[in-house]
Length: 86
Image (tube, rainbow, N blue to C red; front, top):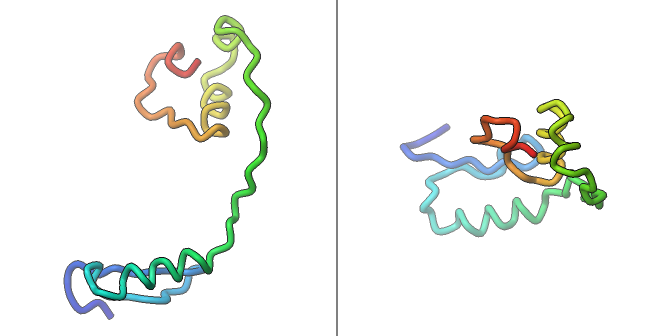
């Protein structure tokens, strides 16, 4: 039951654990508590270095180049030309 605008919700495991105004005194504390409860779902895996040359990368489809970037946490937003992905 939201009681005004803005209203913030804090969810842990798809359950609302807090709701209220984001400037409320207890918001930051509740947010930290929620973050500490969440188990990391993403397991970091060491990725091998990219050893292909620029020309070899240009032979790959854009989909593969996007995957290489995404796997390394690099955003491809704003890339329009294939060269920008390589």
